Image 1 (cartoon, rainbow, N blue to C red):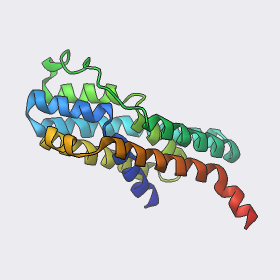
Image 2 (image 1 turned 90 degrees about the horizontal axis):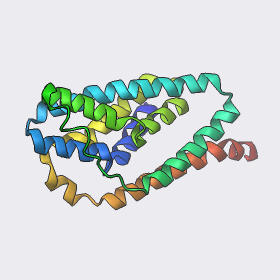
Image 3 (image 1 turned 90 degrees about the vertical axis):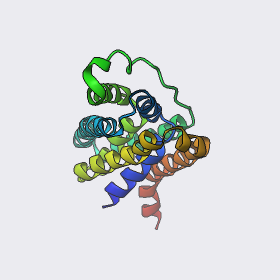
Image 4 (image 1 turned 60 degrees about the horizontal axis):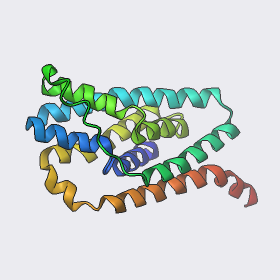
Length: 193
């Protein structure tokens, strides 16, 4: 259950102000059909995060526990730094796919925007950290994405303008930093005890 709750919280925070959240806002403003947009986000996220989680689980099997601890620790610290860099939306995915309808446009644009994104990388790392809980990690990261993006689709500008995005990014960065330091140094602290 820890894998699910941690994954949900981390991704929901990491997604605030992210380019895919901005894409959700653009799609909502353009199409004004929230249900197909939300469904497109859900399907794109499930597929994307299932693949990312599989990569994380595979890495765990291929790398020894000591190397994995360093990879995870340094990756979480890198994510902390990355959280401090604001995202901007490249308006390349919304206009060229409109012939696919609202759902298809959302699915393709959201899937492509999520490739290499913070939340996709976080899913890989979380699946590696919680190696026995692949399904819980994917479910948690997907729920985190939906918690961050579905309200944007329905509430749009009103919601985004009231959330202090910089503060959310700082809190997310601190969480990633703490997870990274724990991954690196928790085994050493146990040895000292």
